[in-house]
Length: 208
Image (cartoon, rainbow, N blue to C red; front, side, top):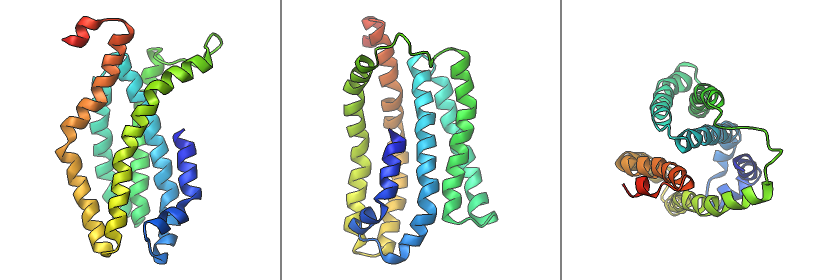
């Protein structure tokens, strides 16, 4: 799903940027940067899928630890790729891609070793499973899309004030993540744990 969404964004990149009032001078930069950025987004989605599997099986320590580790790897690689290797803005996307890839290399074997995921779908009712997942995935996807959409509209409004205003907006949004990190931690850790207990009909632990 993320791969399809990323492909649509790539194919519609010019109309999207036009709606955001991006100047023509930005287009060559986008053509060079977006492929790596979209690829890193897909790899990140795969990594977070593995995180969710770990949490659903009661292991919240591994995802939490790896989030900090991959963030640290990203912080270290960013200046190396951007400045030392002179990759510019593409280096930022590549650093994120490498950090997420490292996370998958650590988490995926753990998931496989514990048999938390399987590819044997012979006895699986695909339509029933997709419908069941969709009932949860649909609202969750909409709620996750709202912040970036609101950020996009904010960027559109600020674009008329010039690149400095857009840059200040982007910098402020980075500080915002630090302000709500505790809330994000709860929203990412509690649903899989509650879902696991709900599936086991363990209502007492949910209430506690």
